[in-house]
Figure 1 (cartoon, rainbow, N blue to C red):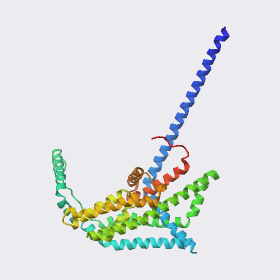
Figure 2 (figure 1 turned 90 degrees about the vertical axis):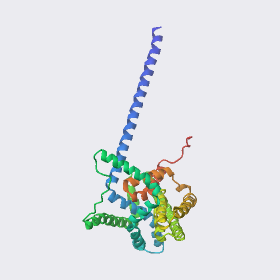
Figure 3 (figure 1 turned 180 degrees about the horizontal axis):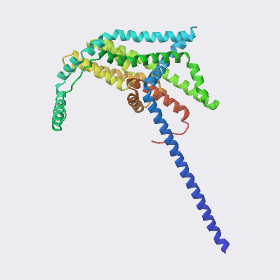
Figure 4 (figure 1 turned 30 degrees about the vertical axis):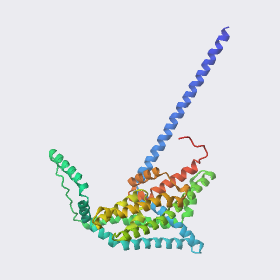
Length: 371
C-alpha cells in the first residue's frame, strides 16, 4: 500500500519539474526575443543617425540611383543599336544635363522676376485678404502686451542685412556644387558598372540560394523603380503641359514657369499638388482684382490632379505598383524631415524598395487574418 501511495506523488513531482522546465524555457525565449528586438532597434537607430549625419554624401548618391533607374532603359536601347555602354551613358547623361540647364535658362528670368517682387506680392495678398489678417494682428497685439508685461523685447522683427554678401553666396553655392559633382559622378559610374555592382554586391552572402534571392530582389527593385518613375515622368510631363495651357487660358503671367513647376512638384505625392494649388492661387491674387477670379485656375488644377491621381496614374501603374497612401504620406514626412526637399522626392522609391524587399523575404503564402 505504501508503494501504491508513492506513485502519484512521484508523478506529481515529475510533472511539476517538467512544468518548471517549460516555464524556464519560455522565460529564456522571451528574453532572447527582447534582446533580438533591442539589438535590431539599436542597429536601425544607428543606421538612421548615420544617414542623417552623412546626408551631404548619401543624398546625392541615392538621387543618382533613382535617376539612373529612369535613364537605364534609354541606355539599354542605345546599346541594342550598337553603341558601347560607356558612350551611351555619357550621351544620356550629357543630354539630361543639357535639358536641365535649358529649362533653368528659360525659367531663370521669370523666376527672378517673381522672387524680386515677393515683398510686393506679400503686401498685395495681405491687402486682399484683410479679413483673414485681422485675427493675426489681434494675436500680434496680445503677444506684444505679454512681451511688455514680462519685460521682453518688442514684437518688431529686425532684419539685419549681411555685409559679407560674397561670403554668403559662396557658403551656399559650395555645398551645392560639391553635391552636384558627386551626383553626376555617381550617376555616370552607376549606369556604366550597374551589372558588375549588382553581381558583386551579392557575393557577401553565404550561399547560392541567398545570392539568387538577393539578385531577384535587386532586379525587382530596379524594374519597379524604372516602371514607376518612367510612367510618372510621362504623366508629369503631360500634367505640366496641361498646366501651362491652363495658366495661359486663365490669363496668368509666365505660364511655362507654372507648367514646369507643376511637373516637378507632382513627383512628390500629396504635398506637391497642394503647394502648386497655393502657388496658382497666390499668382491669381496678384494678377486678378477679385478672389473669385483667382480661384479659377486652382480649382481647375485640383480637378486635373484628382483625375490624374485617382484614375490615370493607377490605371497605368497597375495594382502591383499601388502603395498604401498612408504609408506614402508617412514616408514623405519622415524623409523630408531627414533630408529636406530631396528627401521628399526619394521617399517613394525608398518605400518601394522596402516593400519589394519584404515581399520577397516574407511572401504572402499564409491565409490573411480577419480584420
